Amino acid sequence: MQGSSDINQYREFARKYGISGVPESVTRLTQLVARQDSCVDEIVRVIEKDPALSARLLRVANPRADDESEYTVNSVEEALMRHGIGCALLLAMGTPLSLALIKTFQTMLSLQLEGVDVHQLDSLTGSHMHCSIGFAGKVTGKVHLRMSPAAAKAIAAGILGLQPSDINDIAEIRDAAGELLNIMTGNFKSNLCDAGLDCKLQPPQVGMTEDCETPVEPGGGLERLAFRAGPIEFFVDVTANPWSDD
Amino acid sequence: MAIKILSVDDSRTIRLIVGKAFRPYDVILLEAANGEEGLATAAREKPDLVILDVTMPVMDGVTMLTKLKEDPALKAIPVIMLTAESGRENVLQIARLGVRDYLVKPFKEDQLLEKVGRCVTLEKRPATIAPA
Image (tube, rainbow over all chains, first blue to last red; front, side, top):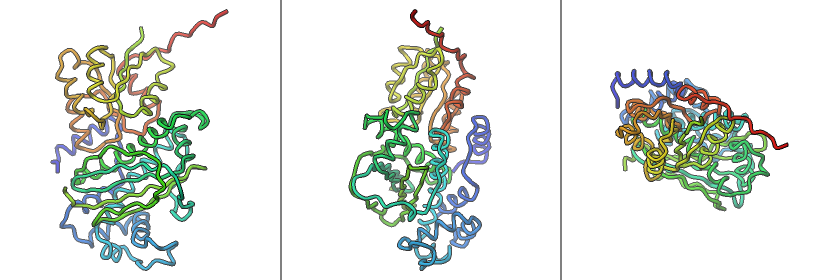
């Protein structure tokens, strides 16, 4: 971890370069998860103060429920006790990732992207574009981006300022999808590293697949996020295991 | 006179976006897909500005920046980092090596042009005369 002079100097550079950070609750949560001796009560308090984090944790802890009425785990504390602190890490990663995605759509595609409940989107079936990027270090895991070929084409066209009909090269679509993945993972990696969970990103893999199952990191958890911007819909799966230190 | 800008990024998408941003300006855009290629291009072409990604295969942006700043013939070239990584350690390391500016992806063309405009003078490309 860095000293206060480094932190002050970073703040100075961040101000100079116009770099903005993640919400305070997420920074605090990541720091608590990074400390292996944090008490669960402290983590519970941080999550309970943020309704969005609480709702996401309960969704992660009730993976088979279609809505809240089917939840078997109903409190933040119970979710953490049953599923481990790895669940809290997923929340800490998902927020900067979602913010980066929303900002990417706003700035580079001029589209309003919204996070939606996974059940609001049609499940992916059959051949779809699958991009994944692994990270390893004090936390290991993978981020998977899954979308239909049409959505991938629309995203590539949007990023490049073209019409989907202008994009005929599959390499351009793959490169744009890979870059979208790079942007969102780069943003959450910064948050993890700042909290002491140093990790390195592996090269992204982009291709078509018919396999819709995302394997869970051994000892870790999985969170599926869903996003929509007009006709563009896609899923992001995040798997992570803290303290793997491989 | 046209200015030379070197864009070093492994993503063709980003290089295309950067190229599109400079299309209206009198800029010769040079491209490289990693730090090694970037360093070789910088040594050969002596660009007026380098726009540099961090995470790249073969040679990453931090290594390229370090080598650039160690080379007396290249160290004065201003560098703008263009990266998705804004972590404390990364920013501190890069800022201490000496960069002119730092732009976090995702970015708007306007932001890039504003930061570049602080380092070099961007002039509109001379209008081409339409054939009679």
